[in-house]
Length: 250
Figure (cartoon, rainbow, N blue to C red):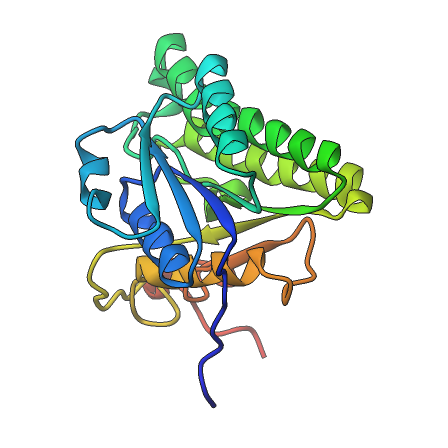
């Protein structure tokens, strides 16, 4: 069976969290499919990787700030509009037991992960509504959106919120042709390696996540309010440690 290819020639795509591992794969996949990509991240040095990449325009900004979201969409309007929004920006490295989390840390994670997606999704929806056309939003969730990680409560809360936001968009704006879906990846690393806690037996490549985004953003995917798990079967497994499993009772 031949691989499915997607043609985004002439499409305009906004990717947030563009300098990260998954973000870079998203930008390269969409640009490689012909899209013009606005790659936004708070990490100015990380964005330098796109300096020589055709059809990619880097932009630095803290997307949890409303004035930055306004600036991004002012640029989008100046560049001719938007077809696809990919909400990927997130703080992923906070590992603190719930009982030890202070309000300052909690208040840093929630805006970075959830408020940014809200600010951009609402602006994209208004842009499409006013233009009398639809559009696609793809947001990055996590297995933590429905199951808890150890010591990542704030992160998990934001991912559950991302999924709820996507459902709200699907329900309220689906009639306008606006679709919102999520990808929930797990164990994403730069080089795929064996993993005994993943049913597939290996980790996930960032390009696999990006390919799922290309699918969900395309007309081929008539999904709305859906969460696509790109996790090697992790979410389907009752326990993540195979050594703790026992044979079912006869």
